[in-house]
Amino acid sequence: MSRIPERTAVNVHWLVRLRWAQIAGQAGTVAVAHFVLGMSLPLAPLSALITVALVSNILIELRYVTGAAAQQRVVDDWQIAVIMALDISLLTGLLYLTGGPHNPFGLLYVVQIALAAVALRAMWTWTLVGFSFLGFGILLLGYRPLKMSPNLDTIGTWVAIGVASAFVVQFLLRITSALSQRDRELADARYLAARQERLASLATMAAGAAHELSTPLGTVALAAKELERALQNKERTVPAEELAADARLIREQVGRCRVILDQMAQGAGTVGEGLATCTVRELVDDILQGVRMRPAVEAQIASEAEDTLVRLPRVAVAQSLRSLVTNGQDAAVAAAPGEPPAVVVNVERRQGRLVIRIVDRGVGMPKDVLARIGEPFFTTKSPGQGMGLGMFLARAVIEGVGGSLSHESSAEKGTTARVELPVDATVPA
Image (spheres, rainbow, N blue to C red):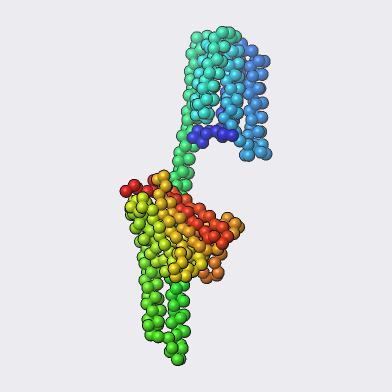
């Protein structure tokens, strides 16, 4: 069901208040005309029409404003249109009994149409326009004449213009105030959303750096432990070349940590990476940079995709896909010399989409694990081996550039991570 359009900033509460003012005005006008000005009016039918308006407004207020379930009720356009059609019918009846088309208060038709134009959709607005046109047409065919002096007729026109103007002005002021308030709320919401986005970007960037640092720091810890054990060995049976290799490995991994921290520092100023253009071959090289030598990884790039240009956050996307490759290595069985690589990165272009498939020869994942893959802090690795953020961050980055990430897995047949980048993220060579 459709609610009153938000652009109107008009709800049933405001309509009820307008109707109370309208009922009070009608009752006051009839009382002044009959008892003060001495005009001969049919009080019984006029009072009946005003009573119908009064009772209907009480029922509407109980149902939509003050009732126990009022806040949960959905107000449809057709319901508002029915209420306004009732008001037009009552106005037609009042005018019929008080001079018909010659009654200056016929201007109140314009108030009803103005309210409908803002509060309702076009279909219902035009329906009420036609209903008002029909009502005034009925008055042209027949009405109860009302004898008034020329002076009273002029005063009546003056009062009618004032009343109609007051309703329209008050109504438009209410609309303007509501729209201004909504604009302020939207501005505040945009500001808060921007702050939340920046905080989320900072959190994502920090989590990504932590995830990236876990691998080299783990390697440093392992190499330092081996180095410490060799140095504490009194017999010193470990060759100096192996000690130097461990020290060199530690230095290399510390350098990698520095590169990761530098990338984080470069993004800290803008909280996010700008778009960069590179070829698919260059992107794959970035992905494989820093990947462990074992288990082996092989890149297979289709000839039609190799020179394709892509425009995206190069570092972030490469880091995300590298995380998928590392996960594949962790899941794969170490390949012996001469055997096929444990992980294959297959890249091709299909119907304007760049498709990257990362296939490992691991043991696969059961359905319950596959259903939860990508949840933050969910991991099947041993404690200290992973944070459960790699897949989550990879999905966030890939979907952030308009791509998609999905997984296929079966027991003893490994897992395939499929990444698709849409056409608007690629630039044909």
